[in-house]
Image (cartoon, rainbow, N blue to C red; front, side, top):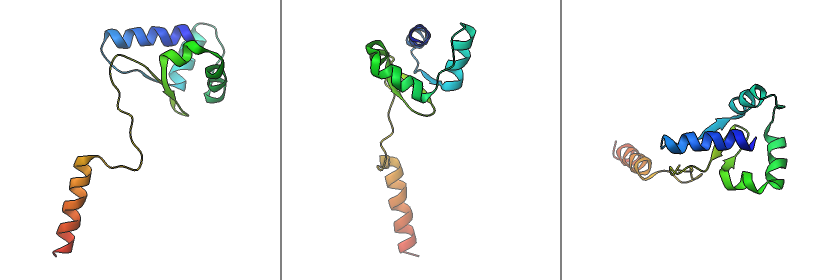
Length: 99
């Protein structure tokens, strides 16, 4: 598992790209190497025990894993609209108020 993620991390850093892997993509690589499949719950258990995973994984959820690459990946802030979206919402509200 760690070898697969490190390989992807290295490739992504060389390409100056982010690295987000779905569970399906991870499991395809795991099976190709003769390893058992992994899911969110099993990964979470390994995360708690393996400090190396904590060093290379930025975050993980039910969709997959995001690695800590050299490229900054924005994490969406829930509940706060982006400034451009906020401007658009304000313009729409103003336009509706003056109709």
